[in-house]
Length: 369
Image (cartoon, rainbow, N blue to C red; front, side):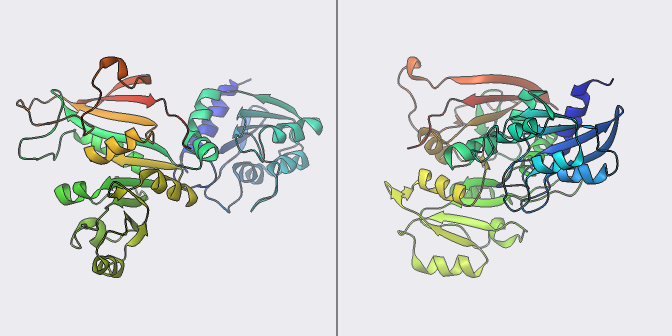
């Protein structure tokens, strides 16, 4: 018999092909195995389409009776836009179901496995569990909090500088690191920057990969609508719109100009003259944005961190020295006065990406009110 982990890892690979495309549903992969051979595969491509199990069962037609199925997430048992997958597995005559992790959605949360067991199907939960849980972290966070799971990405030189003394930052990190970031953009729901980043760097905030990718929703935090009409996030047309979060302080004539240029304007409450970030995160959650990439902008990053809205950090460190005071620190503001007040990070991962080092860590975040 082949190693069951091999089949579950294949299901994980299938699920990853749809990351960033399934919201508000999670990315899920499934593999049907009969006589130690894969006879059916599937993944959930997007909301409203059949789930992974259904695609796998269709491909395995005629060979499902007595077969095993490997699913990264517990099969659903409720009627939504599609029928219950648990019932489909029962009807197909599946003998064993390997489940990577239980569904955190209260509509499922163990009821799918119970439905299968009640029908006499053997259910084994937890195969490659850590990898399967990692796959659905944004979905689980969104289910729990109603806001997107947020990753803050930045890059600095070896001596901690974000840019030269003139503000030049193109490029701090190497080509392989930049390609990795575009791969990340391809898998997330939305990307966010502050208007100062637009004014300074004029980024496109699109996905540029050797193969076809998809563009995430582009979000610009701009409390006074200073976004230049000639900026690339306005002029560069994409399948993803540009959403500008602003306040009632913004000049009315700017509303019309940016809307006429194709942008969507979102007016939110303000805190000390700036967009309320908790309100913005809640609005994004209402729009089923589960994963958010926060790029650049020391001021915006500091405000998000202070509001408890950043879940993970990715910091690319380039083997370069700029010298001098420069522009240092990935967060603006005064910061902590005492080392004992520093915010601890968890689950540190260090890897080399091309010529750069990539540090990844999790922030222990308190749930929002």
